[in-house]
Length: 399
Ligand code: PLP
Image (cartoon, rainbow, N blue to C red; front, side):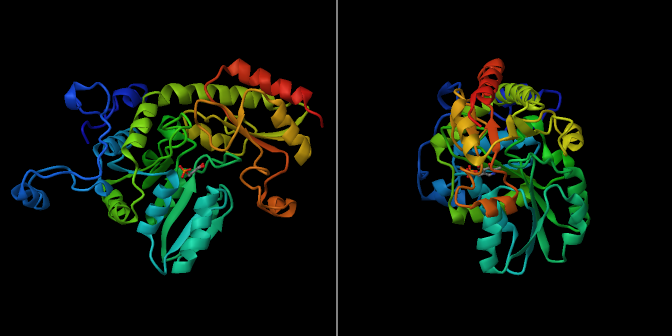
């Protein structure tokens, strides 16, 4: 780390001037994009010295490290209060490499049924082929955790808040239960960001982010970051060198640039998210709003205790059919219809027709995905514009 965490300095300042070297090469104000696949040695003596750990370049080959990606690793680690970090080509690369590194044939993994769908599929369909068993716990069911742990449980995977119903797990309790049994915990904190939640401070071992979302924040790059204690991260790093899903230096630069405005963006998205949720609650065409900042949300108490903001994603169910819900989405003029979240543009989607497009009505119902569910990921546009556009859409769509 170039600079240790200083708790006296607010996170607003640390996202701008956190773990950065005092000076970049060529006196540049911004981090250089070190666009290289290999690192060159002056002579054989330097090569030998490098392999003997006596100096030379930081690494010899791009799959083993890159200075621009390294800076992102250090910066996110500092923001999360972690010993070390590791950058990946995507959030899924971070999650799959980490899960693979921490399990082996005969291991057991516990995950919550509402964690990111692809993470669940990876454990259920892919890891099962290699003799890794798993247990799915109901959303938020920390009470069920103790009974789910087995002597061979290696890892508990959770998210906070979850998609689309925004369940916020009691991470402190989850970590305490797992620590007592020497089980590692991995939290996908993509929806929260270090601005709203710092799971490591609650006892969690590892935190993963899809940097594609809030951290980079502009819908223009895929990336992933893992942070945690240095020993665990280095275990994952070893496998990362072989799996090879490394973050491209230019993508790392875009993530670093996005990080500078993280606090500003997330604070605005927290404000707009809460205001939108409040405006929707009680509207005659809205059946239910799922936002942890509302007192009506099942995780409100835990979220209020552990988070400093509730994020920019608001999920809500309409008093409408599958088709009519699509008409509401089409009636909204401001948000773009697209997957993803956490960026500067507001995005809207109907999970029944986007993330779960391949499922029929019965399968969706079994999974608890209502036809009339809408997920609104607010951007940084004007709060009043977003709310006015949504209310106008609600008032005008054909039911
Ligand atoms: N975790 C969560 C909560 C996500 O929403 C996503 C993407 O939608 C991922 C992980 C995967 O990240 P990526 O798309 O960067 O691979």
